[in-house]
Image (cartoon, rainbow, N blue to C red):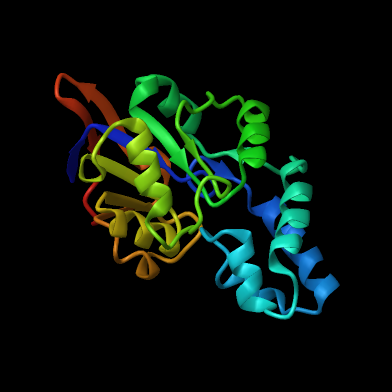
Length: 217
């Protein structure tokens, strides 16, 4: 399946960076400290801002304060972080002004992890610090498209989480979902689904960017 677009917006965790070991470690610590069932967190936290997850699983706590404490500790923890295969090479070959990231993580987290893992710094970076409403609201992708100077309909989003796919579609963008952290059946809103990032081929053309995803067999 071929997609033509003028810019690509990447989610970060689950798309470019495998941060599951870090996220799981800190969510388990947080859940134990607050007497919350970790599985309740695991079912919903992918692709959502930390504060929204906490509001859902522990409405009795100060969500903003708890999210800040957890995110600060997690941002500084790089043990177990891994770049997904092909991510570094893919970003290096794209024109710098034709891609950006929109993540539910904080700016501190991205600013630490990208250089630590040798990924090029995004010229356009939208984080949880930049929007009032995080995914699944469309705000992160609307802002990323605006900063790229491209209409959302001319952007292609690469996501891994149902909340992120929902956000991108609500913004008016087309979406390729990677089945790296969620089941294929939970990503049905996406325009195409690929198993891993290396399945997605991107090339620059005279008219923009050509993104190719193999048809599901």
